[in-house]
Length: 79
Image 1 (spheres, rainbow, N blue to C red):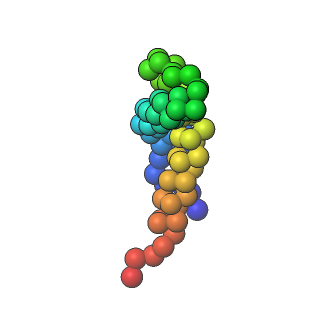
Image 2: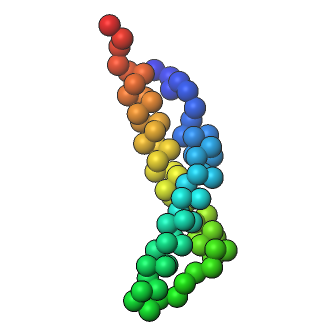
Image 3: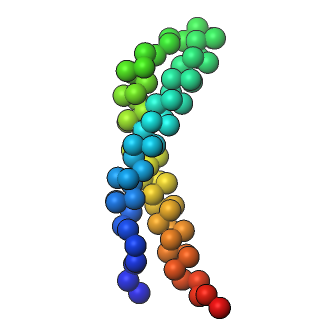
């Protein structure tokens, strides 16, 4: 059976900007919470850069999950 729809790479490319942005926001807020115990507060630039790095594996995992859901939906027959 051939795989229909978008390949995992295309899904990841489309979702990457969202994942990188979400990861950047999470890094920024984690740094703010970490400052309560004496940690450094990251600038928005550093938070954005770390979000871009963390967003790559997160996007790949999520894109693979979406692809599996698409494959499972295509296998189920409609009565």
